[in-house]
Length: 494
Figure 1 (cartoon, helix red, strand yellow):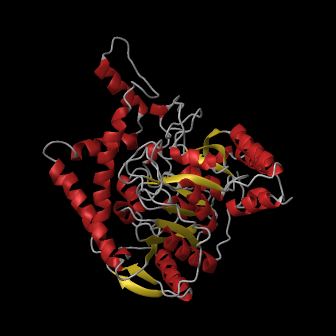
Figure 2 (cartoon, rainbow, N blue to C red):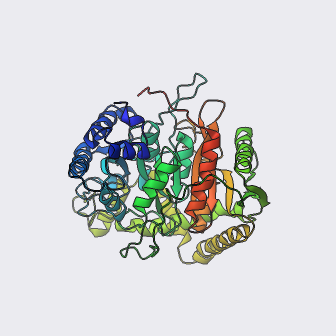
Figure 3 (spheres, rainbow, N blue to C red):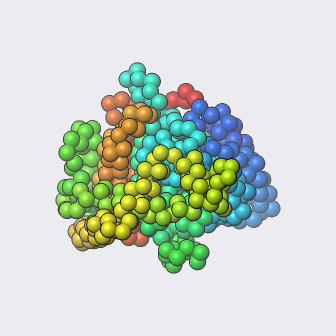
């Protein structure tokens, strides 16, 4: 039997169904790889028994001649933002240390119902706040990639879903869940040479997912390629009565609808995404992406998104505002950490717990959010930011009158070294400059690897689609994937 850990979700699913290997063999192989990859710090909690139990159930069902579930035989990694019944869930924060949910998030339950097993809980930026996975209370995740120019610096795997991207890129799991608030699926996917899709806001339930910014948070899959993302997204999506923002729509069969022929499609290239001082390699990859989509049959048109430059400032008002409200629940009363100094009163307990439990980046965003929501400043900041958000959404509506999807770079650079930007929050926030606008508008968007930079590090291209047109996003991404022929992988140094 060949090494099953080199197979993606579709390869494992199909091989299991064909009887090429058992689900237990797959689970044991991935459990061993997870256990041997501590140096990456991608997993906060390992759950080999969960993966084996799902595998044994799949093997038993196959032996009994029962119809195979969509993800039978496929073990995955679970971002630690999803509550998992009986398994510690921390959002990578000390304030939730010791919290073991008595319930299952809708997303994780859907994946277990589809036959998937869990290899463990994946490290991430604390409460999903970060672009490099350096804000986790449990240490940085390390990218499996190394620069080819002799530099040996530990690289950022992107954030906040850095544990997910690192684990998939290192073949510790064939797929993983991610969440995307301002680009936290797409940017880490681009940094590590994998694929990841943020579906339309409301496609995937947020129930049981620890909230960062409720009007932006959306779950999605991260995997080796476009087909694997389509398979996993089908299992994750769907209406959930427990989430008031869940869309009551049928889940399309995205895998069956995959088609890289773009004849009759129009691809928009937004002129405002050519930002000042854009690296030549990013510009060149973007041009290459245009040529690939033209080769797939698409017509290329230039479009304008005039309010793009206001997206990042608006995001960093709206997201912290919602975070300051959502994180108010962590005060030492019900969840995780409680710091109660001797003789202290209730207010003292709140203050001590939050001071000890939250990391610096989380505190920074809570303070920003509290400030912009405060009396006297609410209209000047929060109301204005919401108006800008409406203008950005209208820009996309007008652009989609001229085209079917948009093509942009995913991130303004390849992966940077850990610590390189940590002292400059503004430089760190600029990592999301290409991903935030689609998040503000609630649109589906995907990153696929397009090539390598001069240092041998992956670069990604982003496809943004109309609301609910995940199929269009997947198809354009597949056209890029087929033409890019991206097969590079990090050498296993861990």
